[in-house]
Image (cartoon, rainbow, N blue to C red; front, side, top):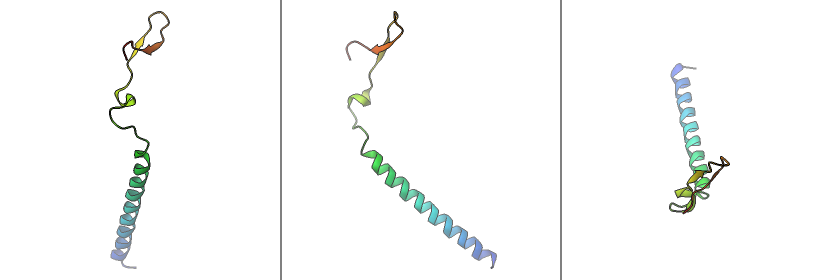
Length: 64
C-alpha cells in the first residue's frame, strides 16, 4: 500500500476518534449540568467556619 494511503487512513481515524471524544464529553457534561446548583444558593456562597479554641473543632460562624 502506498504511504500516502496509510497516512490518509491514519488521518481519517484520528478525525473520527476526535469527533467521538468530543461528542461523548458534551454528552457527559450535559448530564452533569443537571446536578449543578444554581448560582446564589447556600452551597455557592459557602459556610464560614470558625475554630473553637477549647476543643479545636471547626463550627459554623455565628451569624451565618
